[in-house]
Image (cartoon, rainbow, N blue to C red; front, top):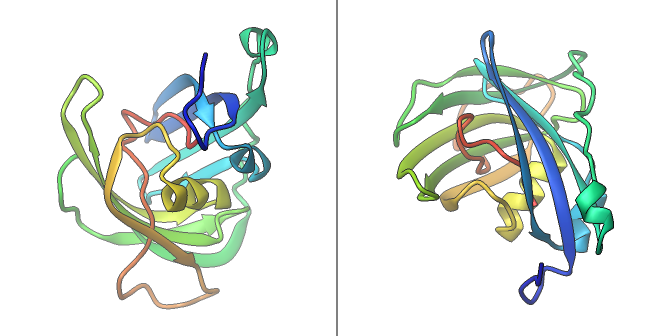
Length: 177
């Protein structure tokens, strides 16, 4: 695979998304920046839905054998919370997500994914550094972010105001590269 300028590594990612008892795993292969290889596992909490994943960066034939593993579920509350929602439309009803583990950012995102199926997705919630890096740099496999940003979550802060970051739909959840 030949990668475009600015994307200097190949990557294989595995993401698991869940809404209630429904779980979907997706494997994605593509190009990424070597900086994204150092950001750690992917975690997001949208209130009623969650996502977790990992990315392995590789070169040459090693990419054919690369087999990312899902990071462990971390249900340990970290005292932070964010406004949360997930909707396959441009708006959704906001609730509260209680962040766990490395979810130290709040995200607010609207995504337009036209990879075969036209779908708009709105997501708000807790996010790890890897997700925010993907939104900030635009290096992701979820689709095209129309709007989105992250901010540091505050311990015990009230849930209000504008929130932060972009992620794509739990249906289309793959991996931020």
